[in-house]
Image 1 (cartoon, rainbow, N blue to C red):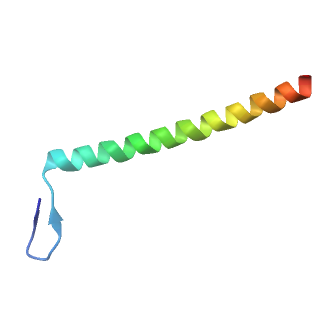
Image 2: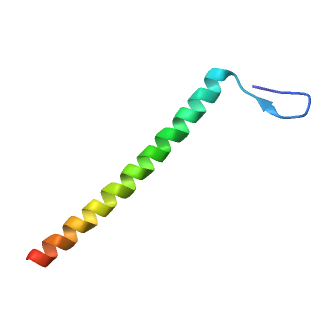
Image 3: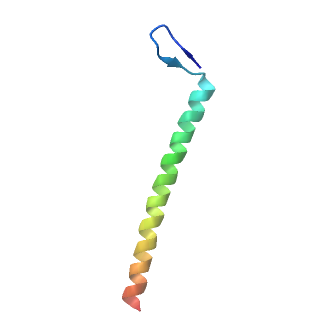
Length: 51
């Protein structure tokens, strides 16, 4: 990591790729968590209606 003449941070290509991969993985996990949560509550409500 280093700064250029204007003060912006420069990264190596591999470091930028890992940061992007991590962000995509976090978004995927968030989507899965939301989807799993909605399915859980739907199943719970269905069980209560049937019982």
